[in-house]
Length: 103
Image (cartoon, rainbow, N blue to C red; front, top):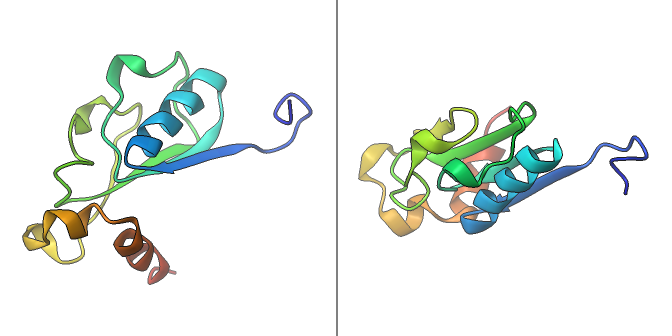
């Protein structure tokens, strides 16, 4: 409804929520961001994904599942390298800290 009225509408989510946000964004032509999200592949809509970005930690084995199946290539956080513990690399609280320390 708001998108049709010309309002800027964005979707976002973490993990499965990021997966679903990408599906919704590509299906409805919305912008947004997914964090620590696996690639939806054929579940994505027909949209080209402009305005949607996936941000994953390079050590996140959950979020990087099907990483080649995002509509756009993911942006990777490399803080801590590949030796970050899996549950830490997939944590939204940790991701928020990585994002907040950037300008």
